Image (cartoon, rainbow, N blue to C red; front, top):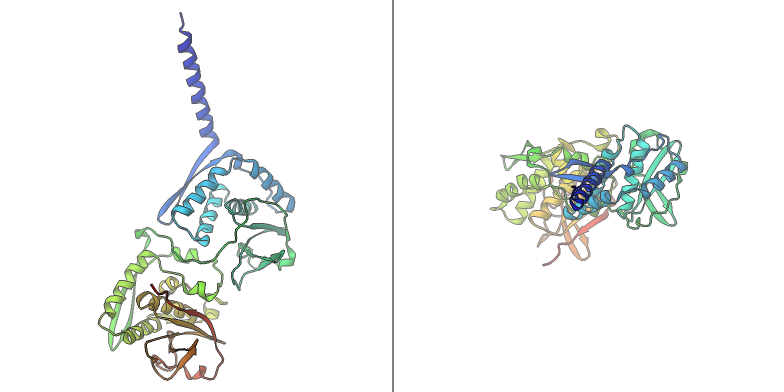
Length: 403
């Protein structure tokens, strides 16, 4: 005689097992390396959406309609949780979203769908992102309140939206008027996106390589073994030209910092402040080759301090940013970024002005410190003769926070 309770228990356990089995088939686990960590997320099959390869307003609306009804929430939760735990700036977080969209639908397989996933993920993570179509292209842009000067943007109701994917089209990208916004309301999409990078992500120590650099100071050759990482170039590959305050405050990654700053501090410990700043000025001036952006890239491009260390050649903008970073990190002195029609340089405020070339700013005198090679061997407080009669603009004034 069959025990009915045991029989019922067997059937119940079988059903539960079957449900879990079906759920595991329905949701696929994905993971990929993201700098020094691993990002994991679960993708429900309902979030796998088909869409045409040629973008249209209707295909974008259909994509959103299907995606919004799918079980996408676990992906968003994984993204926002990872962002919070790792304290990611928006630009670094966007790199995570790009890689996640690539895992869901590869860029090479269907560019339109890949872009729609990027847009959907960014919008559902709370950013005011929008889609526009035209010329058979799909354009993805996000609300931004900062001074960005070299990428296309759209204005909608007085708000500025920066284009995040124009570079994918290269010369095929048309003027803003060629694209029409796809009007889709995403309730979560409220926040502005920021291009400020105030913290570099951590990279795996074994992803760094060593770079030898040297320069001569007081007839003695100084050698440095820098730890550099090519992933830094990838992060800033499509990074726009931001305002000078944002630009001058991009930091170094942990390993690169550890390979340079302690060595510089050791070399400077027996020098007074003026001598130490002179050392940093000449390090920035002579440890790297000079090459103008127009010759190197065919357009204006600014390196972050770490990119200047990573690359063999750089121009005045790049060296000014690196010198600023080094002086701020080691001495934390007030500084000015001084922009001439074709040159950018730095002026530093010492206890007493140094040299004859000073700038009076807000009642205080700053001494020129030229971090870029010039025809003359300029000392602190000296300005290139070609600039003495030129108009300049103070584009960034740094004042240390008093603790």
